[in-house]
Length: 170
Image (cartoon, rainbow, N blue to C red):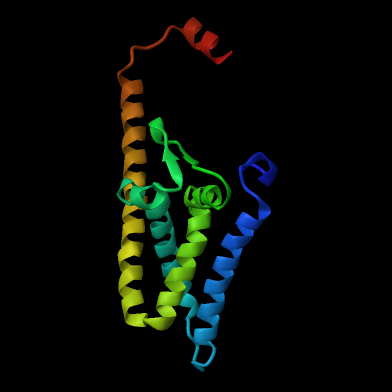
């Protein structure tokens, strides 16, 4: 990531984003402070984290949510992306191209939903969590298939002469 001096932004642009996140976190904390009981069980952290992973990937990478990124991010050929504009618009574009950054905001939203609407949050968490598990299984399946295809190609290749093998490994 480029330093502020190398982008068309000012520190105040990032401060605005930080202030927005802090305001959201403060709102969640203030709303939860008088509830008295344990609001989140430690066992909920992993499902919420998996859901945040899926939501951040959806927002920052998937074609279906390109409409969210479009005002802030230029989609380049080959799947590359870069922030548009300058100042706050550029800073938001940087945020939207970073899955870790979007993940922090997603986590804030999911935890806030969990505290205010627990039943609905369980459904949203389950939907996003199963989507993330599906992503991981699909990636694993693609990897195993690719490894199998490479092994089959190597097995089908004609044997090399001993001199050719030595030459290739030196």
